[in-house]
Image (cartoon, rainbow over all chains, first blue to last red; front, side):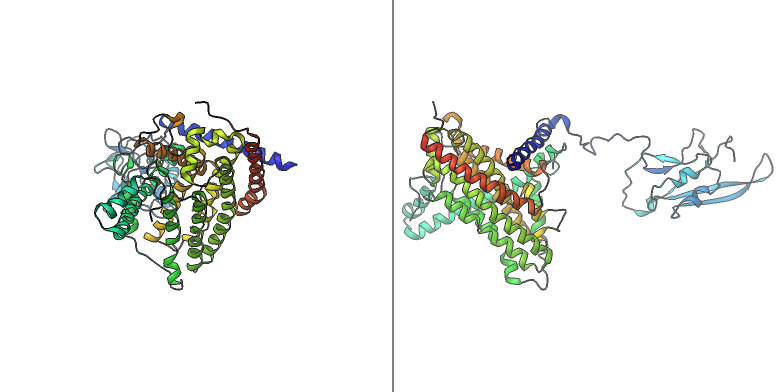
Length: 156
Length: 360
């Protein structure tokens, strides 16, 4: 006799499903969660992994010492550091300084190994997500601004 | 030669060509061709807008907006899709049976287009008012199965064949339920002719009101069997887009795929139109308001058919898919005995006079 209780339970489950769906359909106008890009911008959170950037302060100074920890940590060679030993005026010793910090956005897998490896927090995650370009050379970025140098208080 | 009982809009067209212009029998043929062209255009456009409606309704249920970029509110979206499908290359497999492969897409759409010629869109908008209306509809919709089976076989693809076999067994099983649930309502009207059925509803209230409990059970069984007939909604293991490739139409592309796809949407319209005619009063307005205004009748018909189609779309996005053995269990173990018991119940009710009268 579970035949009839099967039918009854099946019917009740159909009604249950309908209760959920009809609510969404009737209140659709208030509850739509679509963001109509490009007219409306979505809300981007701090922790979003868009691309790797090197923040510069108002004196155009960054915190990168040229230690190459990020280049070694990167699993597929996305980061290339061009560095040189430059004579430091104050102490008279030769110091390693960074010339260019090259970042190939086209190869980056967003694994965060470079950011975790950096000892001075020179590179962080940026929130930009609009990376599509028509010219592939625009995806090879130089992260330090031209003419910038390291901040004076960054420890080795 | 003209198979309509009363003078209506379409007989006017035919008699314009044959008697008005004086072309006789050739004029009749021309008149019928003109009606066929009108219906084809109407149903091609209806098919396109049903696809768009499906996408919008699905989106509203899933808390998002459907297509809204191509044309205002996305109205030109399916025209864009149709242009894309027409310009696609008609690929074929080398070992496919060429003749059957090319023949298969035409069966479902021809069956669908024959079925829509008997519907009553209004009092004077019915082309063929034959006296075996309901019987004709269930018989012709069986022709569509041939297209599915041929498509699966001629594709020379094991998985398309499995999909086609499953679809064939599903469609022929649920045709039984469709026929029997419509038979339940014919007990109330006493006639298979579609215009007679609507005449009974005009004087006595809608049939779902007249035969209360058995009619509501028959309506629910009809909706379930109808969505299974058209391979839609929870019964679409055959064309399940994420499993089995695409079932019997895996090897079709471009215009041939568009035929199968369009045939599915027109079948959905047919199932909804039969439900509206038999259960909900066809082109009659509720409480018989303004029944004689001729241009309101098709409007009410299309409105009611639209609501049933939205109900079928709800089924698609609410319920999980059934496995093929669950589909067959449902039909042969539950729906068929329920249907037979329902017919007996309705027969007892009609004999004892327990149908609800219409007080207005």
